[in-house]
Image (spheres, rainbow, N blue to C red):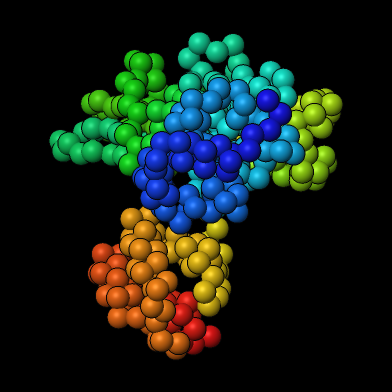
Length: 372
């Protein structure tokens, strides 16, 4: 199947099963307004929504790669680029999309990389890339002058920056928590020769009478975060280079016909990221994109609510109230009292609006034309 008329198929399924717009929205775990725009063909589904739709409609997932009428696989260049830039996609989901793209264009090198990054390098023939060799931290119990004490030091503090001890991190991204500060520490005991070397280095720092009683090495969460960030940056750099070299609307056939260039761009992205020492912060921009509200523009207002983490259920309440005004429109230049009550309820339960309890009301005033 070269293309799929998704709006028509969704509409036919809904009517055949006697479902309302709201009923379909609940099944697909989205707001009624989002589903309505999807069925009208105004918007395209996200990668996750596509998966739920295919499962509901019992459509072969192979058709998913060609679902766009221009032959672009959903969830690839445009979806991945936006998701990585704005931090709205997990590393493992990005790898899943990237693997779909690699398989669709027949690029085995990219496909294998995506699989081992997701599943782990335990049994892979691929060597660990530089960004997976990361510095250890030592947790130690020592004794000096008859007193016992504990030390927690990064390897560069013990051995020096140039001789820091490192470890290969083989775990797949599917087992990593993308909220990396909450990652568990990955402990490993030291061999006798490692312990002796560590004690010798400590004696040079703290004095010859120091005794190392016991020690373990671990990879701190701050370091495992760099694995996730390195993977994200490789994919993002590759997509941006493809967009520059081949074009932003490159089709599958375009990518297949230029496989040598595609592979070259992928290797370039890997080499550029290297050991990922430059990666300290997530790829999320420091300031979100500003959304300008417009009178009566429901889509923009929904985007604004999404930006402020308003749930789809609260958005549905907004549209239920809005629909109730179809028979008796509110007075021009006013925010209806029902909307004011909704805003008060939402503000009380939303941390981002609680910081400015007038913000949601001000947004409604723009939507209803009370002010510009």
